[in-house]
Image (tube, rainbow, N blue to C red; front, side, top):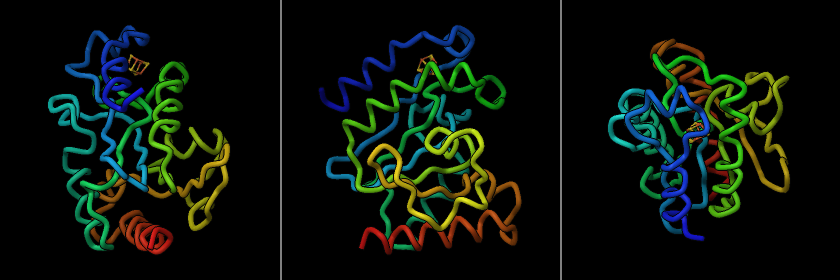
Length: 184
Ligand code: SF4
């Protein structure tokens, strides 16, 4: 199956009644041909819900800048979310929603088969490493999960929330520079 065919299937999904009723669009994610790196975020926000593009809002713009700083071009990177539909008012994804959406991400991982996965934020880190994971304590290590190499870091929205002098931005920068080195 192609990435586009899988995305078309995801776009038909109504497994979460509340999200299916309130979303404008499903946001399956993007996978440029030959992408070696897959970024996994939490869920679409308002801009993503409007455009259908993952990480298209302010957090996405910050992510693009930070990727470019370390020599990674966003247009060559695969980007998906744990949830493909926006939770109303950007609330935290419910555990049941994450469970329902899990098979989609599993199939995307199989199809994309990236050299390295980078999770952005706690929800994505938990998806791979379990609910007990602590983000700060799990950074800086390549985790082996089901035969995949997984690195965890902060979500760019945390970097926005804590500002330019906050710890999440510094950590995100440090981690992305390290990731670029891993891929070099
Ligand atoms: S969040 Fe995932 S499982 Fe729930 S309706 Fe959207 S695509 Fe389906």
